[in-house]
Length: 120
Image (cartoon, rainbow, N blue to C red; front, top):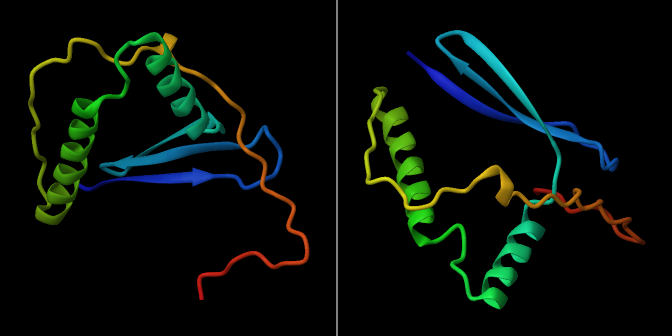
């Protein structure tokens, strides 16, 4: 069975732009849309808050290691065309919806006297 996850987005300078994913498993497609957001600013805010309050930083190194294991397993699964199972002990704490910090997406800057970069 083949599956794929494809990021999608609508490009606009409007703060109401959306982004999402299109997932196809066994010929069935599921599309999820999300309100676009700045992903970097909340990380900086949470990191600064943890330092100022002397609390643990989230995500921590263990969460990062799990992310890398999922990516490596996904690549191996695709290369070998077979499902893989990952296991590890449960985490003491998981990110929760109350941890979410929303910041609107950053607007694209107005270019003055220059052209946008190209891939050439």
